[in-house]
Length: 332
Picture 1 (cartoon, rainbow, N blue to C red):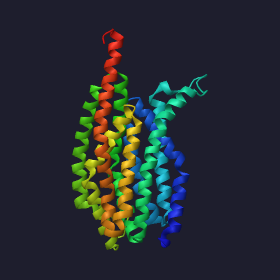
Picture 2 (picture 1 turned 60 degrees about the horizontal axis):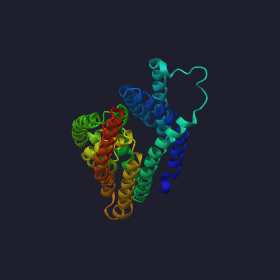
Picture 3 (picture 1 turned 180 degrees about the vertical axis):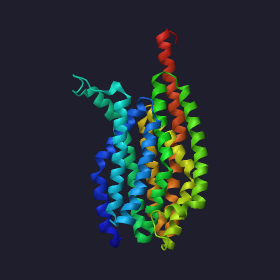
Picture 4 (picture 1 turned 90 degrees about the horizontal axis):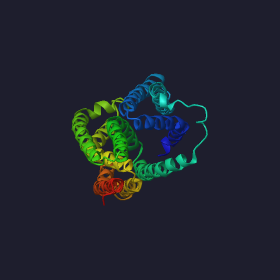
């Protein structure tokens, strides 16, 4: 909408300016997880999310900075989480201290990293295309709808952090156990992750169903009745589908950890198509309610692809492991 275009530009300007600190956190947190510590990056991420909420309130309510305040708050929070991870990594893992002769790049490792990282990055880019198309449809509904999705999205982002953590954990778990020749442990870890995530999903859904509007008040004024009601609807619909999002994160990252990044990219395509269909076909007809169901539909479509893909990948890994063990022992 024309009345918020200037603010939107200002917000995205600061977010883009903070891309280096986003890279810092993801890079260092990934290294820490690869070394077997999946808890600490999550703790720092949760602390950053809480700091982000506090800074949002301070910048908007107390200081009155406008949209630049929340954007800068997001960058600061990401920077804090990245720096905390970096300090922790340097103190905890002596093996990572650089020595003389280790500063020259190894292009073999660079190639390996790119072959794994580019597909993962492409997956997020593809998913983001669907989100952009959906956002364009939301913009057509007016400023109230945009504000509702923004506030609901902020709350949703905080409550879905555990799913990101479980996904990152499964990527590390799958990679380590496949490398150790123990693919059976991959499935055991996945089932435990699903169990933990399911318990959290039910609790989070119940909380947001009854108190979602109260949490949204952290970002909205109590006098904005329509926006608050829409934000509550957004949170209720999305939280009811948290089990679907749990499966997306756990199965997708597990598949990536086993070395099959192409399947993760294809799952992103399913998400993109689902959001695009909702944005182009259903939002103009059904309005804000279609926006609420867009992400749950995207998660469902991704799950319908990822679950059988996971079973296929696990069978391939087990077969490869058996062939390798047979070759080493001389048995067929």
